Length: 249
Image 1 (cartoon, rainbow, N blue to C red):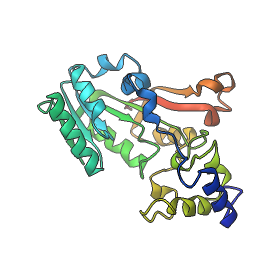
Image 2: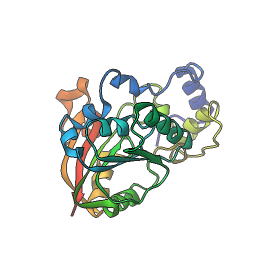
Image 3: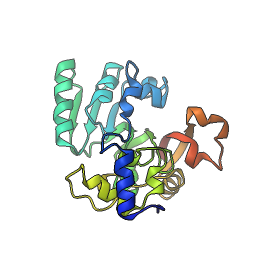
Image 4: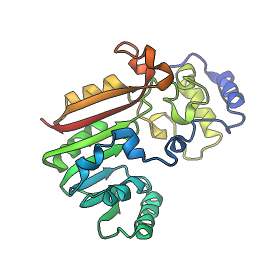
């Protein structure tokens, strides 16, 4: 992967990033004043979770989990591996007065009626195992509502490495990692160790095809400026996000 490597690659990355100050944009700003869950999954999501027990897989700071109980979910279990995010989510639940219906934890095996997973499938270390776990926790007749992106071939699919469009594909992994190590101290030696699994649309579809889950629906949402170019042949490069509903086979 990548055409530009070595010290030249590292120097170019550092120059383009202005000394590590320019990188993957803060996508959360896209949802200011809007419901992220509704933007990604559509307004029908509220009917699909109302009165149900929901697992929010990769809940982050818990804002969507709290929003779901405020829109009628019977109970929401937010799961995230990051302890600081879980602590923050618990405080948000207290602030919103929903601790009786909204709980946050690092792990749950409770069976649920619905699963929501936003912006997580490009990060899971073992996405195939996640699909199996989803099938095991989802009650009969339930559904998993999944949206994630950008995928690997998106112009900003490298996340932190996306200091300009497709930078993560133009530069060698070794150069990307060496440049990142100048500003991050976690010792990551590969792109996977930074928390990205290089998820493509084709790979996700293969994973689902081999899993106990199946698509009830699947949509590749085009990047707004590339809508006219978006088709089955170009979608890896022109898709903003994947959104789908998964059910038991």
